[in-house]
Image 1 (tube, rainbow, N blue to C red):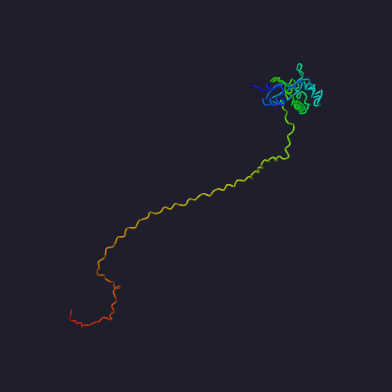
Image 2: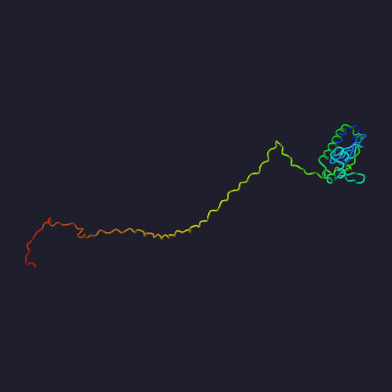
Length: 237
């Protein structure tokens, strides 16, 4: 990746150089400005510490600001050769107020950048991936957990309450009733239908003398009939 940082110099303001550090997400050290030179220590484009040549050591400045005591600094610092490392400051002395220390570093850095913002860059010296010898860049690798839950905003909508689940009443099963046996209806077998014999036309009967019975014969009235009496001859056979 070709950097544009080396193109700055002369009367370019320091604030524009700092903006380019952020744009390129530069990590390392950069020295700019005239005497005293300004040393910028950057991680991912963010200036996490700035100091001038001749400034006191970081630990001494923290004691001067009142966020560390000399005893806490002695317990928390680690001497590594000619360098006093503060990388394990909070682990070695838990009584140190970490928030106060980190905020002091941040505020001092912002104040210095504000004071030199309009000063000329003059010349640029880049030292990629070089961090401050005190090791304060390692503090960001061990972010502390929040101590308190943030209070809800006054105008924030109240959190929705979980729905109340009302258990349904238990329904006792109905007693089992023995089913009555099903009585099958008797099957009635229909008798076969006997077809009637066809009617045969009767032959006409010839008129014949029909003898009438005495009952059917008309009554003969003797009184109405003329009767003749002839004398009976005894000699006739």
